[in-house]
Image 1 (cartoon, rainbow, N blue to C red):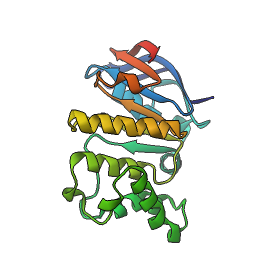
Image 2: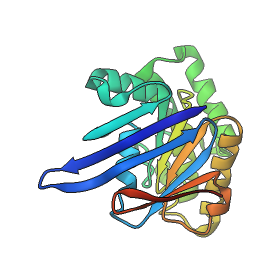
Image 3: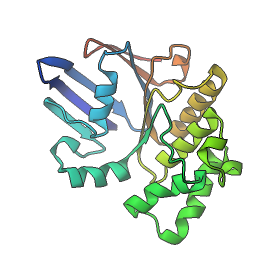
Image 4: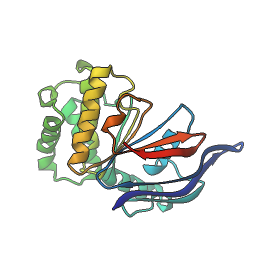
Length: 224
């Protein structure tokens, strides 16, 4: 069953700049998928539309049965908090909160989990990504790989069916990058759909499906 269905979407910015052109793709539930391409190919724009951060100029987008492009900003914020976990290249952890508090924060925003259970759930997520021993530290005390693991735990806080990551290993060395991709593989095997925008070419073996983009269009799609 497809969790992501994108049909002939386009995105045009002022001045006639075509960021996306007639993009169609589908990603099945539980897959680990990659969107690849050179800088400016449209891959980050596509990811922003999948997550509801941006809206398409045309076409249809359905994510886990919902159409984020038709939602109000308030509806979109609530939907995104429960449906999509986002992992950023630069981690985006709040420096004044401990690692544990960073993971609890999305639960406080969305109020999905009972307040009394949130810290315990956050600890379980930190255990899952292998950094439970860093829970009481501030992000600045962690290595880059540890910060990215904390960011992944935070993205999983509300148990979203979809996890997306934009260049999640762009600031990591090859050893840490391989470890993070292995973690994404584990999450996918456990049932979470994971979609990654990446320019990394040496890790293609971990993906179920790869969509290559060029000039705002999907130029090639293949199973790894």
